Image 1 (cartoon, rainbow, N blue to C red):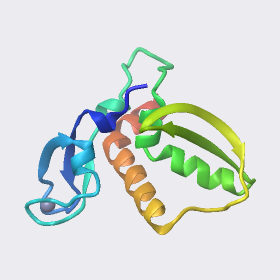
Image 2 (tube, rainbow, N blue to C red):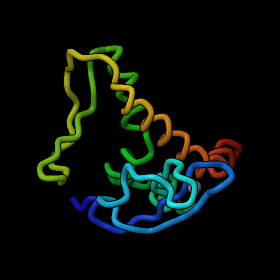
Image 3 (cartoon, protein in one colour):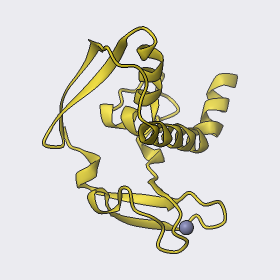
Image 4 (cartoon, rainbow, N blue to C red):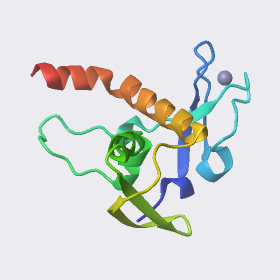
Length: 136
Ligand SMILES: [Zn+2]
């Protein structure tokens, strides 16, 4: 499976008054800050999640699922029951995805911060489409 981290990505500053956009390799830009205001920058990949209007079901990549923040969100729920969905990487390449019984609960503060940002970004980019689908 091809990882997005090896391709160029579009990033956007999350500061409300800035919204500066830049493009570059994820391996160089992930975890860095806005060159204009020093605010946090995050990948913008709304096209990852868009589905054509005439398709009721569209297969998505595991990477898109993870980038949406839904992997983190689902695992927060699954941890309650002692389960998780595990992404197994080898040298940055996703090899396997599997359900697992886990003994740990919850995530680190950094993971939670990243998870909430991803889910918020997903909602920001998809709110209109989600509302339209719900009202059809
Ligand atoms: Zn900025």
